[in-house]
Image 1 (cartoon, rainbow, N blue to C red):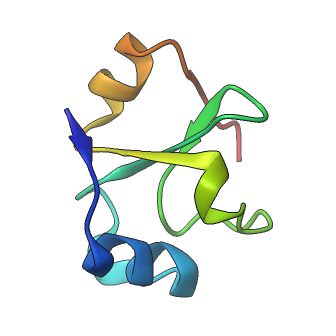
Image 2: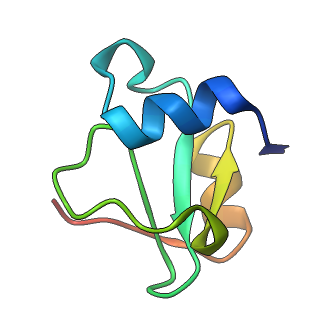
Length: 67
């Protein structure tokens, strides 16, 4: 299930630990998905899809981030 809200985008940009596990970020450029607190550089908004669970991101074809 895709998510698309301002609240989740704000949490992703700020790496808010309160949202860890509540949604996952699929990065189109790399084909990986991460938690919102991942320490890697934050990708542009147009290059991400937000998912409700890791399983839904994996089902969409994304691989897990190894960090």
